[in-house]
Image (cartoon, helix red, strand yellow):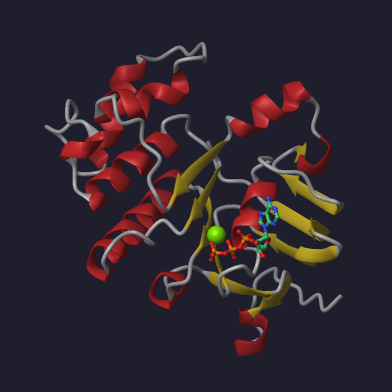
Length: 240
Ligand SMILES: Nc1ncnc2c1ncn2[C@@H]1O[C@H](COP(=O)(O)OP(=O)(O)OP(=O)(O)O)[C@@H](O)[C@H]1O
Ligand SMILES: [Mg+2]
């Protein structure tokens, strides 16, 4: 499945903290071309995870519109929500593998509720091999290194053949060499499979490997490529 474009238009989300309003996302607008790799940087608390969550329909917005593939993410029916989620892969900082399941069963897990025409464990095995984990199919997460666990998590994110991968600090629990290996692997899978990739990261080395970098400060977005050479492919500055 080919990657798909994402449009984020005027998205705001706030939380009440006592009697104060906290603007987690404040009039955020940008778009991502199909098969583009976008990095979202910004300090802790700037809204990176919140932005990934709303793009992935894991959280709702207060205002604005998100379009992704043929879906209007900000107004999905229950049925569309299930269909949309199946077209997205998630990768998290803390891997989120199920501790009692083997690497193979972790990778195959998202397919279990689905009716598919291929062999689910065969597909999982192929992906583990592509991640350099041939021979480790029967290992439990506790028997794997951090980098290996993250490779299992990437295989799991890809098992449903998503068009979009959302990765939230995928290298945050790894040393810098392992982090570089993981981001290279993710970007090479993007190349091979034509995925759209959005990575939230603190790590500038990781961000620089992506096609485009945007940054958030207090929920407001700045398109870095716009400031640089003016060639930001589809980015737009939205100062609200
Ligand atoms: N459920 C919630 N209730 C209240 N405030 C929240 C909630 N979720 C997030 N926030 C606040 O929204 C802001 C943005 O949080 P978010 O997790 O998106 O930041 P982040 O950029 O991912 O930070 P980090 O780099 O530390 O992961 C923060 O101030 C956070 O405290
Ligand atoms: Mg975060």
